[in-house]
Image (cartoon, rainbow, N blue to C red):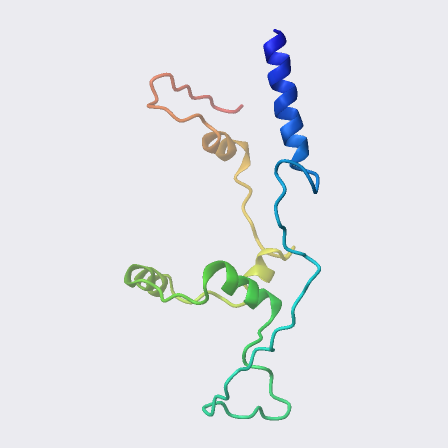
Length: 135
């Protein structure tokens, strides 16, 4: 017990001496406040660039949404052959479909609780299936 206390205090003493500027583990440290000036970076001229036209948007900047999409997904990707075939078979969608679906005058069919019950039925092979007719 006494040897372990002596060993622990000796390790603590060596560890604490490393924190000080003098002691067993004295070492030269760089001065973090000594900052040296470096020459500014120089970009060589690119003669292939054309000067911007007045009033034109900057080509390297897009909207915030476009920059976010490019950062997340890497820009526009080409469609695969399968995806192009499926989109071609689907045809063109009506441009105003979203506004007409949400319109109060749009005719919708209320399938009722029977359809909801069929959709919400548990999956299975039908071994314990039951049918009930609403009255």
